[in-house]
Image (cartoon, rainbow, N blue to C red):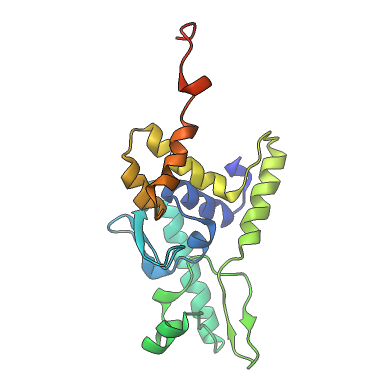
Length: 204
């Protein structure tokens, strides 16, 4: 199904499944938070207001490098037009006044068009979540998938497949950014097959 999804939405979904990111966490990645040398991604200011680290799948490293180069090229074009400033939280903008124009702070997945504020200043936001959501809905329909598929399904699959491989649940909790391990424990129920998770003696 994912092969039916166009770029860059396909790469976003690969990060949801390969790194366990939430949709907005993937869309709000900044260039400086992708570490190709260490093979890791830093997720900034997620749901519970703390940073976390997760893996950068080697399988998408080449695509992600190309996307970063694409984002930098767009930023250079914006700078040449007299814009090229990205949104930052107010506290960070005051602390690092030059950061909004710094390539390292730009979105990995920039939007296709610029926005303009009330004062006439232009900037570029990240790719809107509906772009990816609609692509998933369309691909699921074209693939005739019977079950409901959303962007969050890819994050669920990340957790389920790690646990199937025998990964420690505390590690999965940290990678997902769950505050309470009980939230991660939900995925252990998905692993159970049949009534009460018991295999029939008739089955091999």
